[in-house]
Length: 322
Image 1 (cartoon, rainbow, N blue to C red):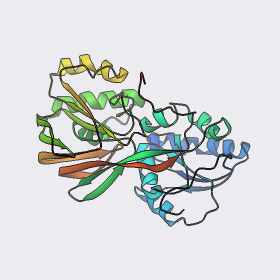
Image 2: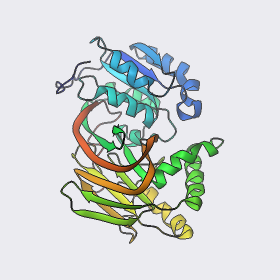
Image 3: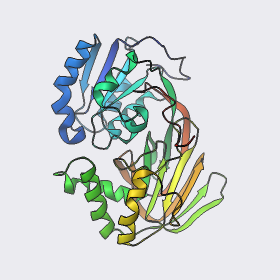
Image 4: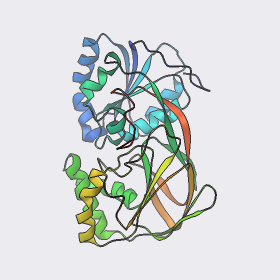
């Protein structure tokens, strides 16, 4: 697949696809939908090779092993976690990545594909779209570097990810909302200190939410980073100081709409990098996955490190009102 600076993307529709599918994504939705998806690929005249992942990390391992140059596109069928794995293997590669949104949250797809359904996304290369290069975020943790394509967080949102298995009997946004409420009632905000890349203090104290975004949405549709762009070379930082349960519920609709930035509990910054130190090891989430616990994180951005084939005409990633 090559490495180094990507060549200029081709404008011709890709006909030879490498399809990587996570059957467990979307609470098994990928496994249930895969036969229909294959029929659609064949109807579009696409020649494809299908790889079905077997365990966490398999998508990244498989793509790193692919050195052939006979594919035009990598289609990832799954959610944000599967996209993150694929992106880690495709950094600075010429091969464009198409996100087929069949996961649970599909937050990255809300921007990358204008929230279109997977059936429309498959047709995108014939609808006037073209590859674009987008940023990738990273965090240096106690145990090493992790990347994220959409968003990361320490504290509350990571604890939400930890608790999601308790509510797998629910679906979609209700699944996330139930987990959020359950987590909030048991969560004790950690004390943390954050500085920008130049050492300027940003925050010092307990935080309900400390999230870093490359995309605009987090947690299955929360519009947490309304000013974010996938191509501005910056990360968006959203910090929410502790607040009471009923006040929290009252303000949740504003987070869904992306109108929460004026709230007194919210600190919002756009930065090229930052350093975070926690009072004790805390879970961290990256694109809805849990790489572990840490006391220190150094966030940064890899500008235009991933070639993405969006499911809609861009610029779709411009912040609201831009």
